[in-house]
Amino acid sequence: MQQTYSTDRLLLNEIHLNDAEFISELVNTPEWIKFIGDRNIKSIADANEYIQKIISNPNTNFWVVRIQDQQTPIGIITFIKRDNLDHHDIGFAFLAKYTKKGYAHEASIVVLNDAVKNANHKLILATTVKENTNSIQLLEKLGLRFYKEIQNESQLLLVYSITADKLLIDQLTESFFNIFANSNQQQPDWNTIFTICLPETIIIKKNSGKEEVYNLNTFIEPRKKILSDGTLTEFREYETSEETRVVGSIAQRFSRFQKKGYHKGTYFEGNGNKLFQYVKTNSGWKISSVIWEDDTLE
Picture 1 (cartoon, rainbow, N blue to C red):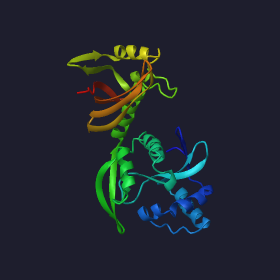
Picture 2: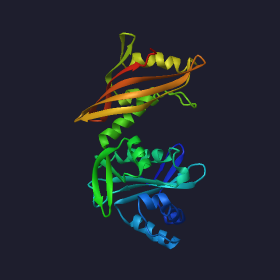
Picture 3: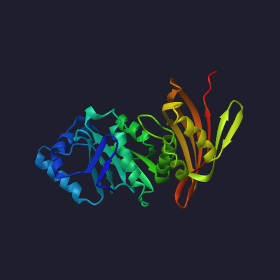
Picture 4: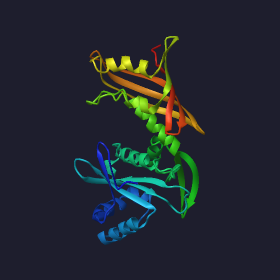
């Protein structure tokens, strides 16, 4: 795992003794004590001792999350191999005033995406308690699903899990949607489609009782034109829900999506369904086909 990560809004640094004041604040918040437990940290010296134990444990990774432009510490992300779990566990905790802003999701994703680069991390876990509904919602948004219950000391813990294959397919799908975005001064990256898809990938649009069938080149060319000549501006398309099934080296995903932007200066929004199929090659997962259908007004 890396010592530092960065996202559009955040900077993650491995925990350091200089973080003692922040850690003392975080672990004594009502949310931490209620859902994680009292660490009995009553002073900066206690916090230093707590941090030193973390640093000295090779099975424990802690990153302090900061807002990029303020260098303000707002939370932590953890990646730990616990004695009572067979696989590494990802965790997160943020000061209350920085929740509900997408920070925990943004920071967790960058750590998860790095973790799956290690072939040993075939399954990643997370634990929470059933009363912590915010944690459960975030885990599910990250793609983790309920796995089992375990008894830990006096607490019943819910264990959530996600496979490395599912995480990699999530990355692949997000990359596909992002290819066509030209919002916020972003420019479409057309070369990406050739790296995430098989050369023979078929793309089919279901449209008013007929099917339009494309290969990669015939699919890209008309979209390249309208996304660069001002016809379609501030456009983005993104997934709103999905169901993915992975069996061996093949996978399929039903995806619900939303799109929005300006067509010839007029704002529009739309929704639809996509069906992705994937195959796991020697160089990783690739998209082998895409079928989509836009919603139509009744």
